[in-house]
Length: 306
Image (cartoon, rainbow, N blue to C red):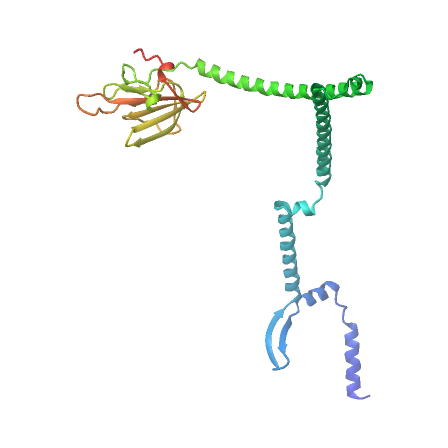
């Protein structure tokens, strides 16, 4: 037997005895094998682009792209208006609401037509356009009576709703008046002399209180400081908001330690008077009282004892 034939048979016998490769190993080998992706220019016989790839990398890339695509789609459907075009869970609810609204509109149209017909009949009767024999007709009388009852029922509903709204407005007004009437306002500057009264005809919307320098200035009621600033016309200005839609303004004051947001109690020291225009004159504090956004005379609410 030739040596080559013997070698070939020996090789075949050895290959037949080798164990069969498992599926997991074959899959791992196929996924980890390297491949080369080449873009080749046939006209120039030149390699334009090449890329080494493994099937495992392609699988991972496709999985990441799928997750990004699915996540982006979920976010778009959850936080944008596309939800109404794709997810139809709310359609039955919207359909029921639409039917309910259409029913209400139809009912209102029917009542409106009945009321208009009744008013038209009344106008004809008052104008004398209805014949006497027709007024004795039982069908005509029943029609007018039925329309009148429906008209009166609708009017009664409107009247009840109007009374309810008016009652709530009166209760709110009464509560505001009661809150304001329970407030007894204190004198802002004790022992001060009124240098000028309240006179809205001359746009003098405050009273001038003259007192010696460094005289204490007190809050007329409990409230919250909402403004503090200095202006060339009014000097140091302090504004306090009080319950009952009331606010007080103190202008041309001296030293103050209050700031916007500070809570003050009635009779609490909020500032002192400043210096006078001259060595022989006392400083003047301008005091304003505002209720419901309108300026009022402080003497109508505070007993200055003058």
